[in-house]
Image 1 (cartoon, rainbow, N blue to C red):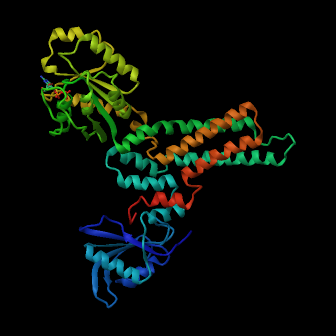
Image 2 (image 1 turned 45 degrees about the vertical axis):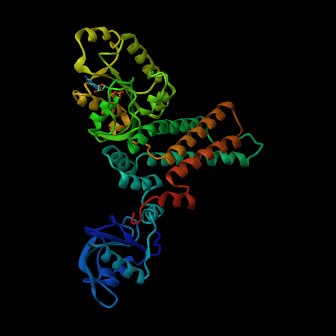
Image 3 (image 1 turned 90 degrees about the horizontal axis):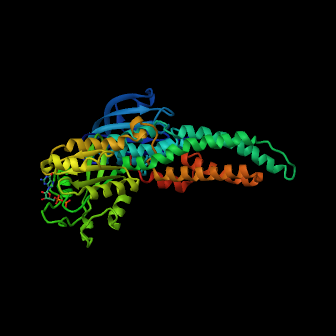
Length: 459
Ligand code: GDP
């Protein structure tokens, strides 16, 4: 276990609060804290105990009444000696305490340095360390769950295991290289093949989960499209309960693209309005228009709104066909239900026979709950979200997963083609490198710096 030089930082949010917590970690953290503490002798206390006392200035004046909790290495977050000082949440007190600690030889922690030390001391792997940052930043039920799952080991434990098995095979393949011309085979090819297939089977759901994972973390980009006058702005307003879109009787009056957020069942939807479309000259907002297609490409979920009383059956037929073709998850929403007649319903019913339509009235704000329920249901049908199984939310992880998968695909193809051991070893090493960087078994200082510098100070 490493104990590095003592560092300290405010662990709670800056600003005024009832209580603030300062964290001191590293070699001598408890002894150094004890030098400013008046109460019990902290150096004589057991790990995981809390002690009331006062912190003193160098001349013996009282800075504050505090509670110091001590954790002895390796049973602490950083696996170093740690003292956590709970003081009153005043900027002045915090500065005084930090200044006193600096006088005793403690230095200010860099952003993420506590977590970095925890990682270096094997408290968790890199994926878990990054999850700490995600957990702190999580702002919805779904992102919180994804981060928590990742923090608790998520997929990295399983990958580490498989990587170890792959390392054993690579060693054997490399041993074959030492025998040069002789035709020896230490690495059992069928077993190697099976292992690589097994790894890819673990990788694929993770790779697929990235779009969901990303959506959970950053919100599900959702677009509302439909012809002018269908009621898109009215719907957006109704959903957001805010007068952000300009509603008007005149088609084409919504000017600015409005992006806003809607939280449903703990899922964040990023609503993208299609205002820009109004600039299309032909006034017909067909799905075929390039801008609509671009919006659809950007979106993870499409809400197609049509004017129920106004739409012609043929047009609706065309729309549903195009939506189908797009391959995007979509919701078909019939608006102006308040103006729908029995006759019109009958006219549309053959076309809607195989479609699920949600009928609403945006203007009267009726059945909006049905629409909201359908929105969250569309996202939740994704098994990963539903079961809380591992979801990849981090682009760095995603890139390494793809890299591993590609290398393994090449290695398997090579095996099938009967390539020489040196070729095989090369692809396997690429796969190992990606897997190792993913879980942090292989790290570089640059990588660590770039990851941990994104943390806040005190984390
Ligand atoms: P957009 O062009 O698709 O954004 O459509 P708007 O939201 O501007 O709505 C066009 C017109 O339809 C406005 O006059 C709205 O008041 C009206 N409208 C929207 N929703 C409904 C509805 O549910 N029922 C009725 N009767 N009128 C609606």
